Image: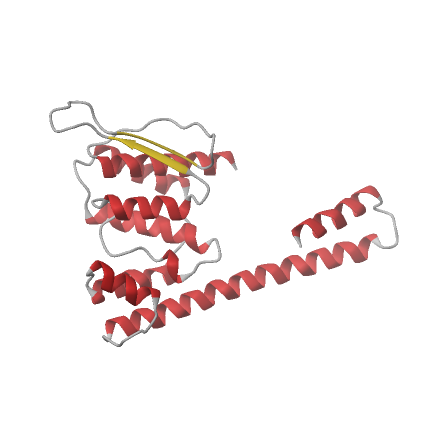
Amino acid sequence: MDELLAKAKDVVAQAPDAPIAPLLLGLCDAVARLQADQSEMRKEAFREGIRGAAKVIQNRQKMQGSILSDIVAENGGNADVFAQEAAKVANVAPVKIEDLRKLRQKLNTALEGNDEIDDELKRIYYSVVMDRNPSAADILPPGSPSRSLDVATFLVERVLWEGWWTLGNGGINVPEKPLAKVGRYSGQDSRPQSAANPVLTLLSAWVLTLIETIKGK
């Protein structure tokens, strides 16, 4: 559809005085509005689904075959906590580059992960997810993204579908800090980052990549 719209606009650009030009432009605008409406409807349906799923989990009701229920069971998560986390998806706001810079500073200076960093990571994650066509598979698993490497890698990989990451860490007696690099696509070079531990290092590199992505737009 996007390709057809682009071709129609090219036709108008080449012959702006043609009798059909206004009709083509009108059709392009109408289709664009329809696409935007459908996207927002899908997102709102997802929000409502998450609200309902979170309430069901919180009420200890069974959800046969539910991805959310399976995640809680597999990870031994607390249902109340996880329900609260899932419900946050419905209340995210766009993330600004200033937010990312402040978070990166916290990641680079923290000695270990903490709840404050977790909250900011989740807010940024869900903001990115909601810009797409989200599904229940995008819900973060139980755990702390700033303390758990498993949760951190889930977060990085769900946001950067076509990206890559590397993380190196020495042994107990190795004085060098961990080192990580994160890229948006194969072949993209990125600056290595270091922080107090492997999890914070990976997240710092990830946030830097998000910053560079926004700056490049």
